[in-house]
Every structure is written in structure tokens, then in C-alpha cells.
Image 1: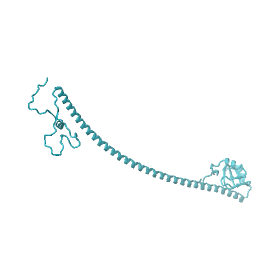
Image 2: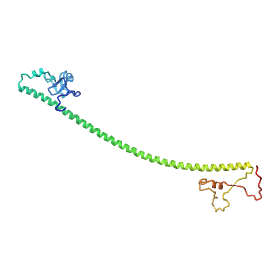
Image 3: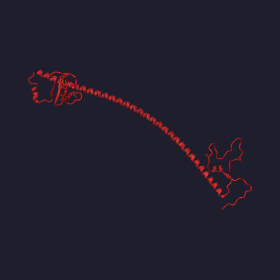
Image 4: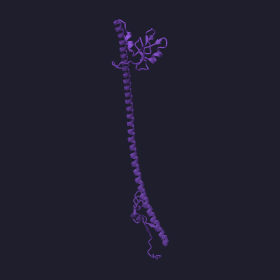
Length: 253
């Protein structure tokens, strides 16, 4: 409350309402609203709620009207000597000045408490922000590591997929070769001239001592990895045993 304001506030700690109508003033320079003054000063002995001073005098507590009538103003100081009037006025001004100073001190105290709470909240907010930043950085690092793991799994999946496709191609080749040989065998059985098959394994070529016979289309451990339609015919080649005096049988119609 500034000095230019013309209203006082109730000094009761939990009230602080603007004084209007009637007010209770004490010898210790405190003022209370009519509600709290009537409640507090009805007990004996009377104690000031603001400073806990004992108010035992007859005029230590006065209920006064804050907006007196013109008749009251005209008669209240009538007949008093000027120095008495000045003394009364000075005491009334001192009471007012004290109330204004107390209100200013209270506002400064409230402001200092608010500033302290604001600083405490700012400090707490800074700590929380720092904690959240650390957690965010940790989560970013975890996301980065998970992305690396995901990329590694993608690479492994791609490798496995390529291997599976290669195995499927090999299987399709072998399946086609098997089907063709089976069909040829079935045709030979139907014609009634199925002969024990002989495989051309290249045994006619001289083999070095201690070496294993080599088969067409065999490359290390991967026996069928290089099979193609041309090499397949060389690997699974059926031939009839040579017979110098063999006669051709007429083909059934």
C-alpha cells in the first residue's frame, strides 16, 4: 500500500481486509475490522492479535467510526485548546503513518518471500531440466545403438536371403534334372529297352596315383553348386554298353 492510499487494512493475520464502516483501534497502534475486533476483544484479558500486547486499560481499545458525520466532526474537538487539538491530530497522524510503514514492511517481506520462492523454483527447474537432458542424451545414445543393431540384423537377413535364393536356384536345377531323368527312364521302360545306365565319369583319362576320380560339375565340397543344363548332361549321361554286333530293333509304332 502506498502513502497516497486513504484506506487501512485489518491487521488480523488471516484477514487483511480493507477497513470500512467501524474499526477497532488499539493503544499499540493496530487496527482491526469490526468482525475480528468484536470476536477478539470480547474476551478478558484482551490481547492484541497482531503483537500479543496486553490491553488492560480502559481506553486501550476503542471502536471508532471511520466515516463520522459532520455533526460529530464539528463537536468532537470543540472547546479544546489549540495545542490539545494539535496533540490529538499529531497522535492520529502518527497512528496512520505507523500503519502505512507496517504495510510497506509487510509488502516488502511478502516480496522477498516471493523472490526466494521464485529462485528456489528456478533452481529446481534447472535441476529438472539438467536431469531430463541427461535422460534424453542417454535415450538418444540407446536409439543410436539400437539402430546399429538393426542395421546389422538387416545385413545378416540380406545375406541369409541371398543364400536361400541361391539354394532355391540350385534346388530348382536339380529338381528339373531329376524330372528329366525320370521322364527319360519312364520313356525307356515304356519302349521296353531300358538298359542299365552307365555314367560318363571321365574314367578313361589316366588318374594320378593317390588321387580320387574327378567328376564333372564337382567343385570341392559344393557338389552341385556349378550345375547348369550343359554340365548336367555331361554328369548324368546315360550310355549303352558298346556291343560290336548289336542290331537295331525296329521301333514300335
